[in-house]
Image 1 (cartoon, rainbow over the protein chains, first blue to last red):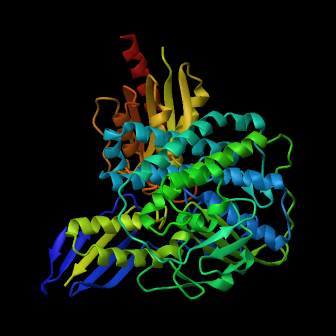
Image 2 (cartoon, one colour):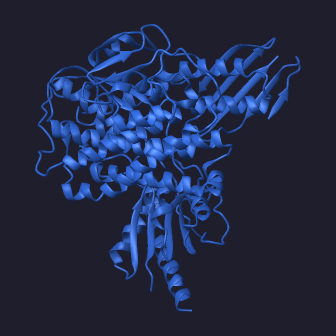
Image 3 (tube, chains in turn cyan, orange):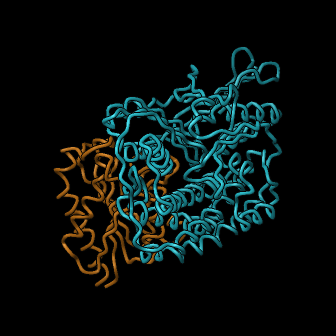
Length: 435
Length: 161
């Protein structure tokens, strides 16, 4: 919708931006044909999770923080369990780590399948929604549902529920799945791997707007593989690398007036977390199959076009499915599900790579195991400044487009991030003001 | 007689959103022949869950502005009208990262997996906050169970005809 202003300017208003999570708004202002202001307004009220974690037991964050998001609960569980185990000086077994990785694969599979096909692909194929896409491309949507179901089923078998898993605890799991239970998943995961390879090929044929951004990418890194459930260090394209325990020394959260979600700086500057950062900093850790699929899709070993994040997610889907199959194929019954964890006063940080990027938790607990301070830093809040940077670039680069096309392009620029502003609503106002 | 599904939709943690699972569990305890009970949290799974079923009854919490606990029954199977999206979310109350029941029904209709008979039993919710179901909804669980049994009976009668 377009409104003329009395001063001759223009305001474009989109009442509801579909396929983006959360309650927020966007303000883009032009003066004399130049973009002078861009703001991502997140006006959804803060939910105060960090506040009500204080005073709770150190064993509770995996269950409490998992409720923050229905799509990436495992990311919250992994970061919180790692933080608590670090504080308490506990190292879990390699088998517990593998099972955590398997659960994390389930989350990536369902989240990436949903975003690639149901939320992001309609942008490139010219459909308003996945439902419209299904009318013309039923086979593609059926394939998407098949992959997502494989992820849901994996979450159910390992986590106890497809949404908000209940089998995770500080120290490991309440119960390990059996080989027989895991093998029930194998055929669907194998089919999904074939589907994911086809998906990489399909999305690589999309027509991508030309846009290269000089982001500072930040991601976890682990010597034993592509980072999912943990990393041994944090790396950045600026050349900085440091242990996870030092995250709070490099990332500073701060409040801006136009957003209820905290912004963040990395070593004083804007930075980017998410699939593009993970991929560009960890290409060498992908499997040969995933690397091959990426290169055949036309990606290099790094990618700086945010619109191509859909290809990167598809490549990560291939990797997660391969990884899940490998863990299942090597699993044996009888591993202890957890190690004992006794509380110890201290401060600790845990981090993992949520589908949308680096997430980290910092806790302080006392000698009784009671939480005295908590900090949760999810990917979307860290990416707000990068989203604004992309919107500024898009608004400048495509200023000649008509209002409808420009608005749509800006919506796409937001959806590139698969932003998860909250789990409660799905409205976002986009306002473009020209004068 | 072919198998019919009773699907309890919703999150067990989010107040009255638990009503779908609670009602479905009650149906399961009755032990009806040719009826399979499924709890589901992700509406997007419906398209595959009911593919090939003779019929399905879905129980879900709704928010249409009616009095809490009110029980709505609506036929949405192949050939029926779509669900109103003001009461049954198209994009999901979990946000646009999930499809709601209305969206999942229409996606299934498009993909050809929607059974010929699908009855939705909706219970008007008072709260979707974390915690237990409201007293108003808890009091009407028996009525919702009755509505499900009536819907299943009608499907049986139709099959005999």
